[in-house]
Length: 64
Image: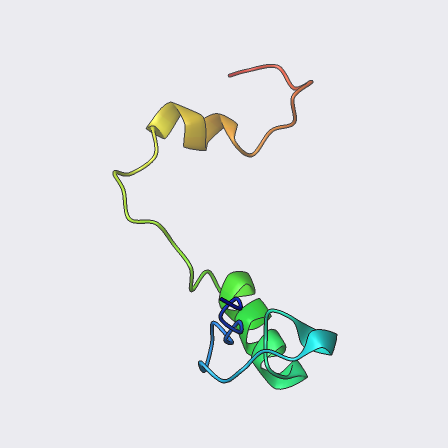
């Protein structure tokens, strides 16, 4: 039994070797834009307020 050909996660067309796992550079770029635009998010509870407060400082910064 041969393995099922991979399909593009964006549009479902067969993936091409040059742009695997996508079918084309256009689908690859659409996926990248989804990541950059925070389109892929996992729902969950809000972050801890202390973590957000200290999140703007580097590891070597003094806490407030």
